[in-house]
Image (cartoon, rainbow, N blue to C red; front, side, top):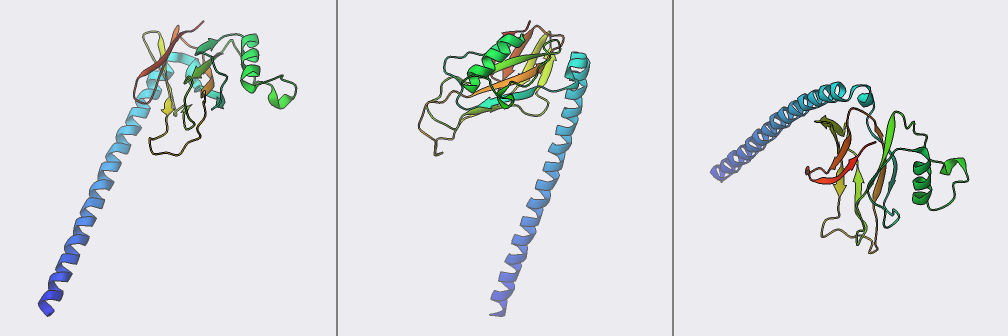
Length: 194
């Protein structure tokens, strides 16, 4: 009986030791990944700030995120206040009468506005967002990184047509084309910038 208890205790301690080793390994691996990410972030900031000059002192900013955008709108670069106001009114679905419905102010000498659409989707659960520090520059092309979200196959979603879109204020800089990529580096849009 005593030998059986000793075997159980030995097995118990081996399992605890194994768990402790796995936990330690995970902590070391996570710390190494975190250090790599911090180094990557520092390199990205340096590249962005020198490549885009003053324009990158600010990151792109979401003006409007909408899961039911007007059908039929395409990705586009907006360079004028009039076009911006008309589009904002269209996205908000009516007349801009109160101050709360007025579009946020954009200085079109320093910024442009990007309308980014996912196109028509058959269900809810789709959307597009911006990650932190989403812009880089390479050979006169600015790349805007985005996160495109889609529902998993087993997710319960509303059964209706949706048109997810994002309206983004983008700093101007030394680039003539804007390329939008998703989290898998797939090009989602490429636009001329005026």
